[in-house]
Length: 113
Image 1 (cartoon, rainbow, N blue to C red):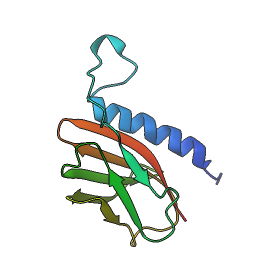
Image 2: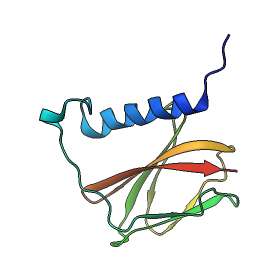
Image 3: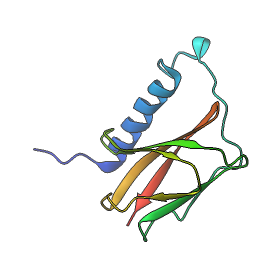
Image 4: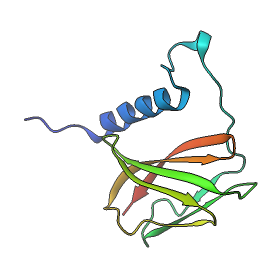
């Protein structure tokens, strides 16, 4: 059995999240629904080494945070009221973090060491 290249998995996951975020294929530009981007989004430290990550934005409202592994499996879902997110339960690796705040959303890569 061949090993799956992590970069191909990450690309595939980004495509899947793109379809989910828009509710349709991102390749259909005529019907593409645009969502607002989160202003002044900051995710730090990245890579994470101490089991917690801080997420701050311009508005600093309550956020829905979902974390996916490279295969697209949701491994964490939390509502974050402050800035600190505990991720002690996650193994080292590359993840995709999806953040929703009010009517805005963003997706980023998160590395845990």
